[in-house]
Image 1 (cartoon, rainbow, N blue to C red):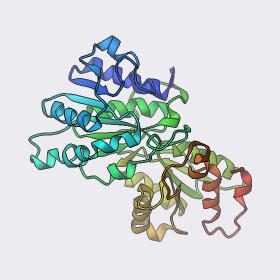
Image 2 (spheres, one colour):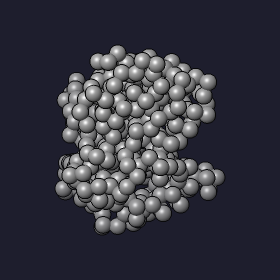
Image 3 (cartoon, rainbow, N blue to C red):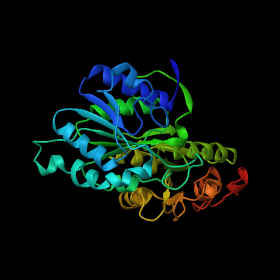
Image 4 (tube, rainbow, N blue to C red):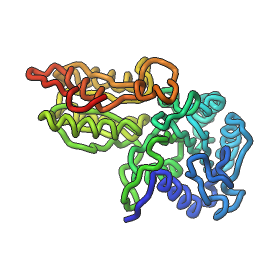
Length: 334
């Protein structure tokens, strides 16, 4: 067992992949000597040389375009976008070329790469530094989109993403970078598999990345009022694990989806639709969503109003048509 932060686990995954495969290369803005804004690439240039881990100009479109060429030539690039909204200048490269290269060439060319994006809020950041942009990528056929919520998953999912033959958008929750855990590094569940983090019988709460800890906190408070909440960590948004979600919803009959992103047209809307369409006769109440507000990301001192909280998840649980519904909102202050 090793005590690591999530940033440390990601660093270990990159380090092990660089060691095992000389075709793996890491590059982006300030990932070299500095070791990245969040120190995820700390020490990699020192230990592997500046031909394996190197800095690039401040040009995200160029970073991803360069990665496409390297991937077509047999390399496995791992690129960092530094902050979520900084990736938008590379969006055309990602959706028009990275995602479509295999299909466009009937499989004769592929783009195996990992696009690392520190994403979401909870760090007191300002606009362009705290976007939840997952819906853009999950909507794009040809991309795999994942987000870890634990230190162990950060390591194993990064190793899987680098080994994957298709492009993977790897969303790293910024607020969890310096969370710590005792872990045994190794294989957990593969990409495309959800995990039940907390078993329950009354309601299913689906979450991913930074919202898993919020769902777990809400489940603890709900238990004090006699509600048994099952928390499912989706881990992968595309491909999506319908099997695990179905099993949970069939058991509980109630479902809530939690996301930091804005509600309208978000990933949560797609998940709620899938659950409603496929499992309608197992549901005792409509599928509810707990999300960020439909606004641009607010100023740091206001972000706590925007981000989903355990209080708001408890309020959603309370609305799920219980015959003897207690006021769960009193279990925790906002």
